Image (cartoon, rainbow, N blue to C red; front, side):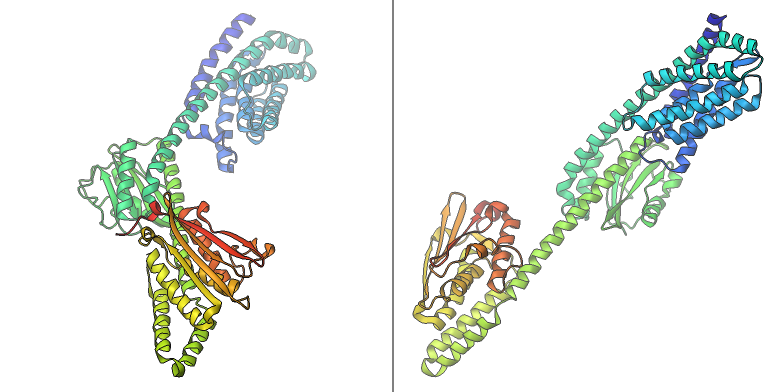
Length: 565
């Protein structure tokens, strides 16, 4: 009897296996492995596993005025894979259903099913983040069946009938439920591993595309960058066509349908407009859902992904296919993941542009920061010379006008070292007229360096700092030495003064953004611009001994911005 019943029950496992395989191919399958599931998603899982459990009752074998069944397979798998809520709810539904069918063992079997779902859910929670394997399922399944046998012996009457039932079904049900649970969980595990491998391949492909597209998206979202990115995606995916739009028009369309989906056209499809309006991914499984205004359009299905920048939809990425319902769930997830990566790249491109604009604004602010006292002092010097030395006063007015013309009117970010030194000369001519013999200037400049490009307004703040805070703080004044020479692939620039020097406490802070006033702000600005343009190793280096003077070093890599003719 045991052997026949075991064979029949185990044969029912084929039905469970088919159901498990079909389930592994559905969207509901992936819900089991989400960190946080919504109430709706949990309800889907509860409905599915409850159906499995109830089916396990109906495909059972009537014996000894009871039913030998594989009902517990559904509730236990629900708890082990779906968690406490899914397991408990499934066990409750299947258990109450069994009780409603009646029979002298109904209450015992129903309570065992409820307990099985709860216990399996508790094990799921205890084993997180690791998922329970089939061995755990077998142990729980056998335990629940044996527990139900114990309840039958404990509460079912007449007792001799209960003993006969347990003797008849205990072994076959333990075996059948153990096999059913293990088969179900192995199929689910293998399907999940397969999904994981495919997901990893899709992720690798998305990252490869993103890496190839990064140089283009750094230019922002425009027809040129969009066209290059669309070609990249088209060559690396199975999509029949790839399109990228902004909010108003098609920026690029590569592949099928490019005869009428042309760059520069206004948005042509209903799916794209819907995506733009809702900010949600739009999936079109047929031509009607795409909604192209061209009746003969060959595009039959599409996934449209919104592209965000600063939390606003700025465009869309579209992957088209030439067949209806050609996209799988993985294709849709791939497109969505690719869109998210592109959004990040657009954000970075925008941030880079903002940083560049901020740097330009900072440079303009620095140019506008010419110390009013310098202007007033220069004018006072010129006024005092107007009667005693008109020619010298005239020369200084020209120098002053040249200084302001060069410092305030140039719009270029880079100038030659020659042009930068001319600005320095204009500044020093005015200061020397004011302080006379107290200020000595020495320049050692290699002719081969004069045409090398340098960030505008780099040297003047450094020289001004040396004059104002180094030399003129000493009653006897001193000397500023400006040295410019090539060293390998760089141009080394050194500004040395023999002034009062900088204290250790001040030296550690002088290059911190926002430190000090006047020229101090210029030093930190120059330092930050050099680091942003050439990298941290090209930051200013300052050596100073209090009472003896200061040396400022900087290097300009000639290969970074080239040499002008």
